[in-house]
Length: 392
Ligand code: PLP
Image (tube, rainbow, N blue to C red; front, side, top):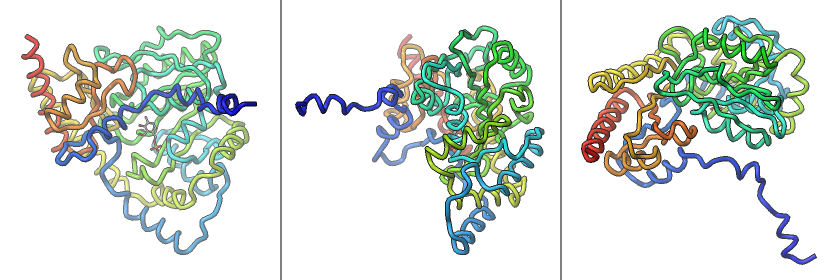
């Protein structure tokens, strides 16, 4: 066999090649090396993890051997998670349904990969957090996007979703990245009705469950108890993005199935992060979480005031820490994000990163703080007005 023919076999995985490029990375690359930019692109808290969490981890590192743990996570942590689900979500689940994972992204993967195979279809929002789309594509499954339109407050119309014999699941995310929308209970009930009618799983991404500005978000675990797999995380609530710990809530009887998957991927999640997570659940005062959420709320309110005063307010994000701003007519979100960078020295995420529909939007992060967000919204208003004047 010639070398040429041998080489032909060395292709890169087509399912990975099918994952779209990350617009967040592309913007970061454009901004690299430039001083004095206003950064509104990062989707992570700017706080330290609570002190008790850092102490618990530091002490454990000195006193204990860091070893593999049970794949599904240690019993004490899973019991603490069960208590948290009752306290925060108001749902009672058995310990065996809780699976500790590598971040919320690991919880999402554990859920998606436990139920989807090649050729299966899953209904997903457009806009959607792109990593979820990437996960579905690597499984050889097919995302079918349902629209979340700005003019409908970014809320879905479940009765209009195209369900066929290949559809197996629905992905929802509330509070949502990138819109900040919280799905109200009546919409969750309509989604559950569609799922029940067709016998579908609902994969519910609830990693922002404790970051909300009005009513507590309702968990899909409550509304569609018999078919929901839910993903949670320590990253956002406790400002622990780099610790990489989350958990999935599976259906009864699934643990050994998902154990095979997670065991093959990464054996078990990090032990030091598990110690930290247990401290987060058992020692962090609610007031400390509230203070962080208050900072995001203040940033949101400053943004909304400015938008309102300019007659440009379209919707009210009720959770997570993001706000979508529209792109002026005649621009794609990539082009507009570049003009914002060139002319206003600010970095945002082009909406195209989250789906086709949101090419009319850019995302800013409220986690950047109220002053930065207010400055960003002012610069966005100025540039939008300049570009609109130039068109007239
Ligand atoms: N789901 C959504 C909607 C997110 O925005 C993120 C992180 O940005 C995750 C899941 C993943 O969270 P983690 O950082 O815990 O993996």
